[in-house]
Image 1 (cartoon, rainbow, N blue to C red):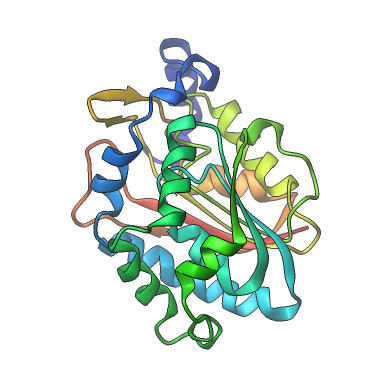
Image 2: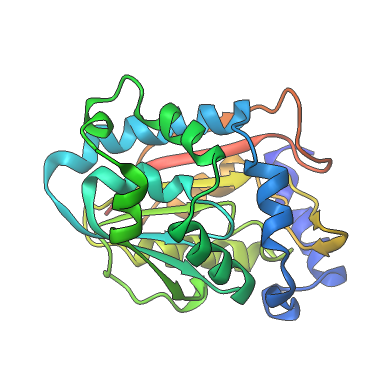
Length: 258
């Protein structure tokens, strides 16, 4: 199915599969998710890093960003690392207890693979190369906080990321749209942002447990952002060697809050 078919399929799936509130997110196996997805740097993430780091290096230095947020941080540090040179404080907002515990442990003692990610983020980018001891700085600037994308307060953050959240917490297109808009609305005017989504995802398993996803395409992302953001680009990142079945690449949106 293409982007034009997503709403039909979303309506069908919503009748059969759960919404966000129907899932016990505290059962999420953070370590298994990390090992499968970020135990090493994959080609897709390198492409996403290039898009996001170039975007932030272009827009974020225009003024100091006091407050940054990674919404639904999960078992992933690299979105926060892309914001590190440009923000005094980074909130790692996360709903699941297991993920919050994992994040706290990683801030204290980061896994070796994050060094590969930082190299990809910083190489050839002067804004990032000025950061000395990035993981010590991340430890001092980042704070893990219990959060829910659906209840984010508006106009709170000067820089933001949301990676693989809105489409990966529900089967329902309305909830995907609401989560995406809530993320953007949590930012201050002109705040740079980057959001990444699984394309046409049919759900995913972590350590044998099934979690819902909403099958969305590039046009769905564009429509969500149209009246609330200045969109710089929406790119599809193809997966030549997919990490799992049931998706067709990734979508990366970059821009600034209106």
